[in-house]
Structure formats: C-alpha cells, structure tokens
Image 1 (cartoon, rainbow, N blue to C red):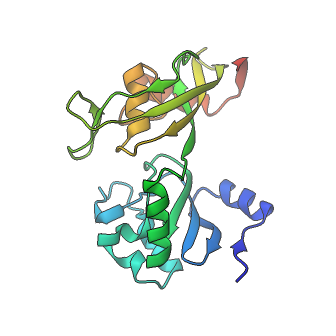
Image 2: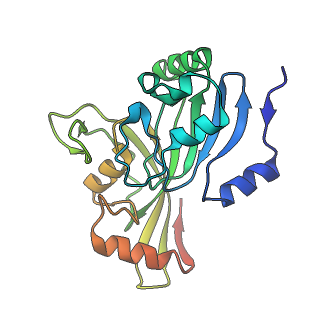
Length: 224
C-alpha cells in the first residue's frame, strides 16, 4: 500500500504550529511525529507530569493499536526528546513496526541529529564529548565517573552576537550515539556552554538573556 506522506506545505505548517503534535508521515506500523516544546515523551509511564502534556495521550488518540497503550512497550516510542525541545520522533504503531525500529536502533542504523543554541562561543575544536553521565537518579542527570558511557559529536555552525545585552550564542549541530537522559544538555553544561532557555541546567542569567535574545535579531559574527 502506498504510504501516506505529508506534503511540504503540510510539514511547514505543522512546524509553525507549536501548540500540538502532528503526524508528518504514516507508514504501516510506523509513524513520524513532530513534538512541539512542552510535550513529554512519557515512555514507560515515567512522566514527571510537570508539563501536563503526555505525548502518549496524543498517540493514543490517533492510533487504535494495542502497543501504543502498553507502558511495558513504552507506548511505541523508541527514543525521546526533552520536554523543552522540539523535533521528530519515530513511533512503532504496531508490534511489527516497533520491533523493526528497535532492531534498527540497536544496530545503529538510525542516526539522530539535533540543532542546539548554546550560551557563549562554542570552540570549533571541540568536536566530541564522551564523558559518562549518571542518569539513574530521578529528575536530574550529571557527569560522573560512575555513570554510563555517553558519546556526543558536535559541529559548531556559527557564533552570533545578540543586539540586546551584547551577549553571544552559538548554533551547533549534534549527533548522539548513546541515549542518556538529558545527555545533550548535560554535556553542553559540562563543557561550559549550557543550552539557552534551559531552566534545569543553565544559570538564571543565561535563561534571562536567552529569553531576551528571542525577541530580537541576531548579528552574524562567524559561520563555519
């Protein structure tokens, strides 16, 4: 059967509509979902309920399959995005689709790439962060020698100076090869360049300046 795919106009429209998730591509047993900020990928039902917007509820509205209703199968989710983040998620909407996605994830045939805005100027020479992350404790992760291995690859895209407060931010591309909780945010903070508007891992001054920067334009300084 011919897969149902969203048009370019539909994708553009859905990315602008940040209030509610959207299904961008729907195949037999697999869906690609756009997650806006504020929605939680509540796999295994381990939601902290701070956002009040569990993504599993949206998936269950769209699908009749049993797998998206079972916490033991993580509601069909095979990976996660943090609550403040937006992006695309792969969801297995039946048992066969979920098994196929899990197999590809374990074989590292699915790559995950992110675009992140950090405080200050990320040095172009820092291309890999591979310090272990302790993510067993509830609510917060941190770099720890006794944590689990975590590998983050980074490419600096550009440095920008904001018109307001004369602050500097960096746009970086990230690929992760492990999936520790809050891995990107923890590794960025550990390097000294926390992600902007991050109320959990960034200092209050960074959050305030970043919020101010969102209301103005950037002056491009260096693009790599």
